Image 1 (cartoon, rainbow, N blue to C red):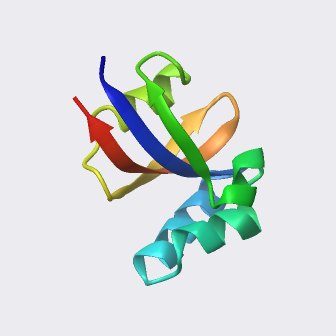
Image 2: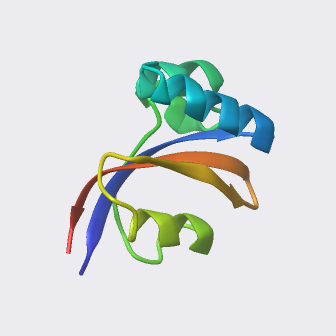
Length: 93
C-alpha cells in the first residue's frame, strides 16, 4: 500500500494561506510558520502529520498528498476544515 508523510498549515482564509505560501517561498521556515499560524493541533509539531495511507485523510487532501512532488509546498487546498498548505515530506509507492 502506498504510504506518505506530510506536514501542513491550516488557516481560515484563502488570502492568509496565499500570504503564508509566499512567505515560505521567500525563505520562511515551514515548521515555524505552522507553529505560529496553523489552527490544527499538529502545529505544535511544525505541522507534521506523520505517515498515513490513501483514504485516511479527506479526499481533497489525499489527492494532493498522493500526486504532488515530494518537498514542494502545495496550496491553497480547500477542505471542510479550511485552507491548507501541504508539503509531502516522503512517499513510498
